[in-house]
Image 1: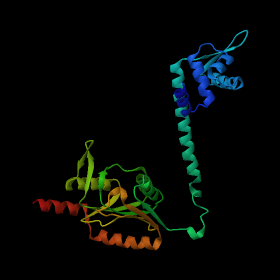
Image 2 (image 1 turned 90 degrees about the vertical axis):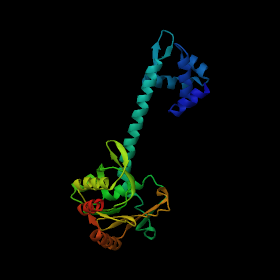
Image 3 (image 1 turned 180 degrees about the horizontal axis):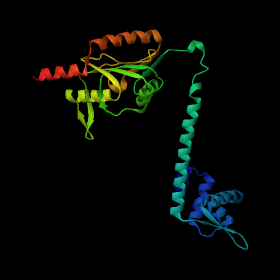
Image 4 (image 1 turned 180 degrees about the vertical axis):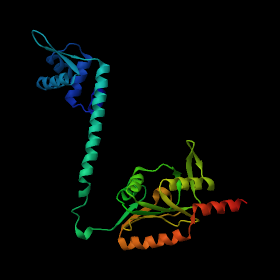
Length: 285
């Protein structure tokens, strides 16, 4: 019984409610006095709990000439009712959570003293919110994103929602990708190692979705510039495992303009997809 009471408490019952529930569950046509005796709790507390259970549809309240009788309803019906209530409660809390943080997001560190203001944010080591940080930068961009990237891990041709919205806002997305790398692409539902031909196909898919793309032999560091205001640096080192690397977000317009000039230098010396395709074909011949 103690174990059952403990488990009921974990799904939201109070200690007394759990004990009353177990007493009703085991019994048949019980009075409040019977329930109090079986549950070993004070009778005044039992009355409130029984009324609550009857209102929730957990038990039936039967009036007789001499007293009120309480009887638990079908076990399977109770389980189903509680499962529905828990799911509804969870969904309501998630909706409220998202609404709450949407409202209070502008308040985040809004009262931070001036001496503690910073234009640099460091994300060190494994951080499950890394991708969200990058998507936030895309979400808040209006005009242009410059992206220098080396593919790693699994790469999909699917366009994320924030990038799709960026294109709809009229934004321009220019990317320089490293022409070599260790990554996979999904082909016919299966992840496969990428050849140069698949790399070209991948980039052509990105171009159809709105990106301007060039390819280069080597991308020394992963970086992105958002609206010539914010720079994202994904520090790369072959000797450092991916999950232990650091990212830096720099909110400095002069630095962003400097990195934009650097990006343009790489852009000018990088190959278009057609040029890269010709180079591959000539190499094969």
